[in-house]
Length: 86
Image 1: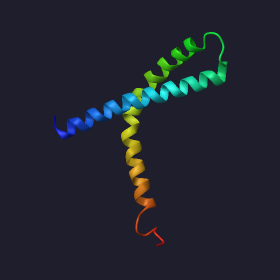
Image 2: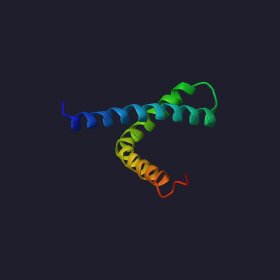
Image 3: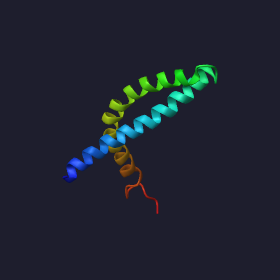
Image 4: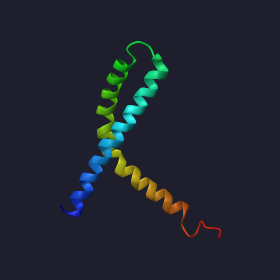
């Protein structure tokens, strides 16, 4: 597999895991805050997670490369030689 293809597959796999983990945690926390640990909590959490992941996966796939470029841009400015005082 070429380096380019491997990079593209890695981005897809990263987006899959990142969106899944974040959706699972965020939907669980928000469901707990909104409804408490009452009967049917796990059913409500599961439904919220399914919707959250369906939205998060395409968004992370699109936004992660842009966020990486923004982070690179920010780091370059924070640690440029002109800004250093030492």
